[in-house]
Image: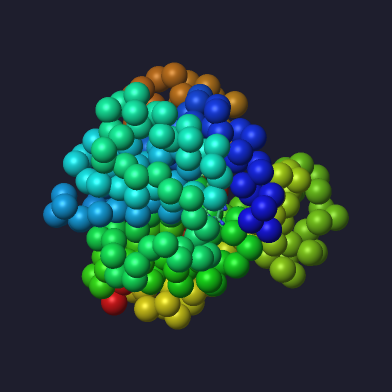
Length: 264
Ligand SMILES: C[S@@+](CC[C@H](N)C(=O)[O-])C[C@H]1O[C@@H](n2cnc3c(N)ncnc32)[C@H](O)[C@@H]1O
């Protein structure tokens, strides 16, 4: 399963960040993510951060700019190469080590060695063995370190299938939680309860789960482009997302789910 994920990201590596950030929906998603990450960063800037499935190092560079040293690990060599170039351009090459690795088998990383573990943009959903992936993320974290993981949401993929009138694939998605909606790579779609169970099993104490985003859907920016162009409106939307995105009754409405946990 991981094979098609790395192929897809190898193909889009050169324009991956630019494509995402030119779309207002994904800009909002990234702003929510960054605000959530910043709440949980270690106070000690000497802590080493693992950015697993870190791709082109979008988050690694932000973390390096705050003073942390980061190890950015990904299964796509092209994503890593673009990441190396971007880090060099920003003078961050000494702060970020880019290395090949698979989230479900981080054999080159020692147990209990990172003060913060990040896994953004669904590598756990793409890797084909989500149980192994979460146990690896838990293994490399120091006791007491925070682990933040973003994954695909079961209810959101049902909504996506309805939007493109692919009702025929719904029974299989509902049965297996696995989908391959756009034919690019298979993904595992989680419910909040499944995530909580998997984290607990790996001795990761769940602190919060948020939906990203819970109110804004892609059509909001199509129907009301002012949300993207008017800074005041955009900030009001972002504030609302941050105020309610961990409400238990709203989390499952999120486009994606993000767990924050602490290694016991
Ligand atoms: C949506 S991108 C997210 C990249 C980065 N974390 C970010 O948020 O900008 C998903 C990344 O997961 C990586 N990936 C997919 N399967 C993986 C695996 N089994 N192990 C490590 N990385 C994987 C892809 O190569 C890609 O770089």
